[in-house]
Amino acid sequence: MRLLMISDVYFPRVNGVSTSIHTTRHALEKLGHEVTLIAPAYPQAMHDDERLLRVPGRTVLLDAEDRFMHWGTLNRLLGALDPNRFDLVHIHTPFAAHYAGTRMARARGLPVVETYHTFFEQYLEHYIPFLPGVLLRLAARRLTASQGNAVDALISPSHAMRDRLLAYGVTTPVEVIPTGIDLDAWREPQAADPRPALGLGADQAMLLFVGRLAFEKNIDLLIDMFQQVLKQRPDACLVLAGEGPAEKRLRRKVEQMGLTDKVRFVGYMPRDGSLQALYRAAHAFVFASTTETQGLVLIEALALGTPVVSVAEMGTRDIVHEGEGCLVAPHQVHGFAERVLELLTHPHLAAQLAARAVIAADAWQEDQVAARLVDFYQRTLEQSSKGTQKGRA
Image 1 (tube, rainbow, N blue to C red):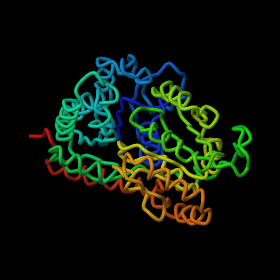
Image 2 (image 1 turned 180 degrees about the vertical axis):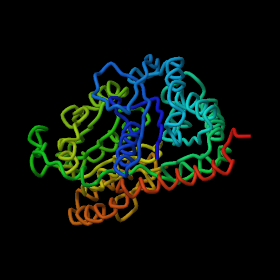
Image 3 (image 1 turned 120 degrees about the vertical axis):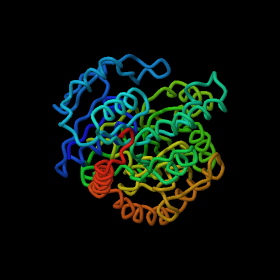
Image 4 (image 1 turned 135 degrees about the vertical axis):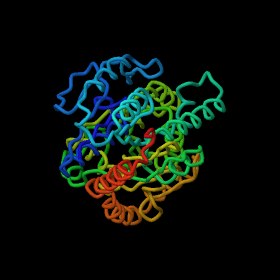
């Protein structure tokens, strides 16, 4: 199958969408499919392959890490592509990629699908705080429904997000297909224990968060929770692995709470074994985001046997189940701290969860998930060949 993917974000910009696209593309290519990706160009030099086409762009005002692809350049690139080169268009983001991608697909008579990666209803309030939240949520719902109904089929990474899309008024078929991970490649790299470099003793309790340090990740709750944990485990340390727009504010918060020597900001960690070593060293992986459409870092933690304590909200509920991890109601600082302390106090419980987590993670093997995606593509192509493609006469 010959696929054209279009996205407004990709590496070197690090986030869940970039990771999902990279993983999906790699898995499809391993199955013998040809995947061309159009994505923004960034200032950082990248060693791209011949099927990764970069489009110049400009900085996004509200987030300097992102880029808006130049509309004219993107459309000229799409117009220059051989119409017989692709079987299907797969859009990953709702900005220029969506509008240019659907326009090109309709003009060429190609079926077009889209993955809804980001829960914009909750996301926008963190980045446009000067507008009323109720208006932002309403606008996000209406825009999502309009875009969802403009394509032939939608992919939701989780059941919770699918339910939201249907509630918005999306009538396009929505299929739940998560992003998998290459478990063997993820588990294989080994690296030295990071504890000495972090100034931690062998038995010192270590909590870990991995992800973008962004407002929607609800890291404030993790820091507040950690302060309560320290009352019973003053030896504990919280490690935040990532970077992002909320980092400066989070550092100020930690300083104001007098936790500078207890909270470590370690930045982005390479996936050459260094990041895996952090997961393996942690007594618990803690996650409080309420806006995840999936949450790939949760799968990473489970796959390495790191006990997970997570808020039970949105896409996290598809990944973490009680008995394989610990689930907490949203916004419950005290309840979250209690579950963490339960793991720290009862090592045998943590070991049981770790063993079950490793087994549970096998369900997210990328080749299994990619096979589901290929089946979805094939069914979409069949519907298109019957003349049921949207935009066709």
